[in-house]
Image 1 (cartoon, rainbow, N blue to C red):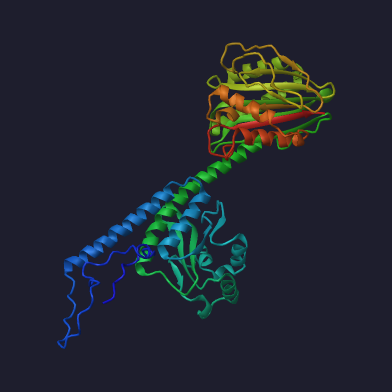
Image 2: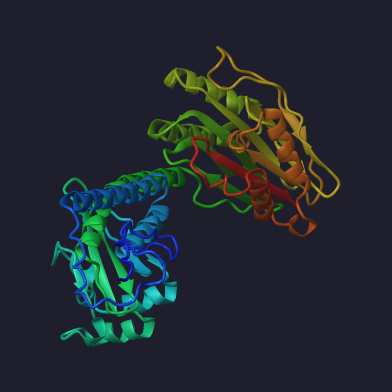
Length: 468
């Protein structure tokens, strides 16, 4: 008799050579000579053996689901979760390719399409099929709430001609689609898996992928809310910062800003002042979230007013800002640095309140500007510190930044400062004339491997001014 194969687990056959032979398999000894007596019928498996096999299958399915949901739970970014959903679903239904269309029913977005084994042009071809002729389109438009299976697209009667053409072009012959919806989350999208040959998942596979999809929908819904919160924080922070940097003769400006998912209180500003002067400022408000973002906006607006009235005296500007902070927000503190620049004379007068010193980057020197030690705003009953004068040479860049650039490294402050200095000293000669390129180089050198875009409670601000 032939050796029976074990049933599929989650739509995947066991690798060849790893399936142990059943206990009743005939040994490999030479077969005896045929007997004239009738062969005895094979013994019927006992009911207990069938129950054990069924229980073993259930345990295997539960183990598979547990492993797949654990992998999904470890994803913290929406796009990563969508890719994991496609990979796990393909394994469960025995498909090789697929796509997931995210389109929350509440209309708040974000809307996106992610493919598995499909390139961006492939997804573009699929999107040319009329929406009502696709499985995901009918699900997203509320025309069906059930899974939709097409076992043989190329021979199916009534199939949209464009759909048939795209299926033949991309080489898929069958599909299985699932709505991504729960009672709590509502409808957020649809997932479709594609088969190279006419096929369909069996009942067991449909049950497993249905259980997985319900868990995945809840996880995706949580990541959706997080993504919306991040987008809100970025939008609010960006709206409170300068929409564009001013153009002032004798100096080139560039700024870089990175904020965390909850929004933070780091800010920068550059404003033209009378007689061709320029005011530069960076600062950081304690805390994060909506209250810190709002406080940052108030503080920046106040500093602009003080800079217009008495910008040539940075100490007076910060003293007035400290008084305002202490009277209106006594429970909050902030660091700030304000520089009054005269580009025609290449002269800078600056004062800082608990803020890190600027960097002077040039062909012949890379050094931190000497600033006096001072307390943050709001920490003392009366803030005061002397100002410092700097005279950059032609072609040199003054780099202002917030402490978040140092804190995101995870290093002690002395090592973080050393890393920053090494990054500034390593600016290639070819980009020294571009303050934006200098800021990018320093940002990526101090925070490599995506640390500048990773989730963090620390905001990052860089403001570069190159003097001609």
